[in-house]
Length: 151
Image 1 (cartoon, one colour):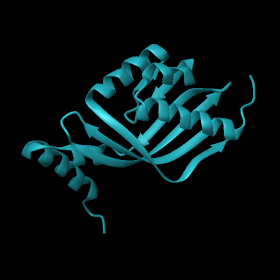
Image 2 (tube, helix red, strand yellow):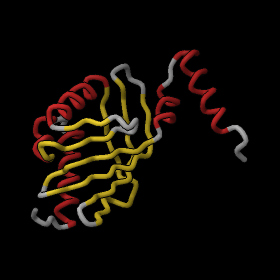
Image 3 (cartoon, rainbow, N blue to C red):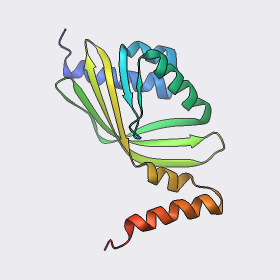
Image 4 (cartoon, rainbow, N blue to C red):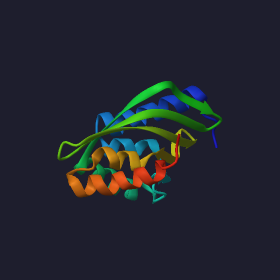
């Protein structure tokens, strides 16, 4: 296993993100990951290997456009792990928009990404994307129950 410098890891993470999300080039983005790379969605659902990643991102890009903005700390690298706090901006195929803070953790091995774990507030996304009285009422009641008793 070769050692990858922190600068190389930061560049790898940024290049992967640019290729996948700014260019929308799923096939080229797969060249940045290991054959058995793992992607862990905020729901806990796991995608393993390039075929599952390909299916995931092809599906995601049918329904939404995603962009990221750095929150100001940049990509922070510790050992072979990169942490990136950013804003995820989504526009759905029917024009609904949302923006949430996200933490993305990238594990890297031999100049490739071996695992990505993403953390963001899915309820806040649902709150922003809810449409129609029923969706808004259901999501709103969950939010109200969670916030009940907060000062």
